[in-house]
Image (tube, rainbow, N blue to C red; front, side):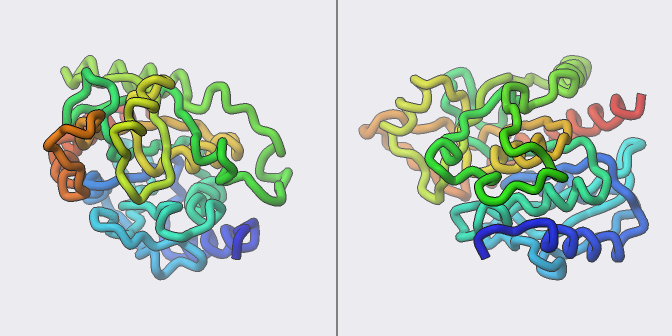
Length: 281
């Protein structure tokens, strides 16, 4: 099936509703190496992805494939421990089905996290970057998650994307990081299809067009969330310094990504907890 629509995400949402006592307000998607944050959810109802109708199941190490729904820092949260990706063979409408399900369940704030390669020369592995904007290279070349029939009850045919990442949420995140003494970069994230890591020429090109970090996720989810009127925030855990010369002896690996997550994860948890507290104020 190329286009997953209302029938599919309502079936998925109904299954989740039947297996939890909670009604979440905040949805959080955890990227590669960042999944341990889900263990902090209190009184969690845990649902495996492979139990939910139509839900895409990740085949990638570091994406354990569970939803944790419960309480954290005064909020009722739905935390996705890992995500599926376009490169795994899923259509975009299925990759982003979990965001549609969140909306159906009552979530109005979505926090997207990922592991990303650092294009900006000021970034180091383990750093955090707050997304101010993104480059949707996948969508520019046709793989937009809104391609296909539009359901006007979900959102407009031509949604505005000039302010994808919510201004007030970004301000809160910077306040929390400052209060907690955690360095938090800001920048532009670019999404590529993957699964190959970038060539040095790719990196030089992406740097030239204004990208600060590069990954293989997040942007499709952000687009669908904004299409549905949800408030969006995004974070990248910098997993490696992107290689921009063919003479470099360095090599990018997924193991490196997971190791860097062990550095970024604790910092991200502090920021996320502080954000959730501020949302209750």
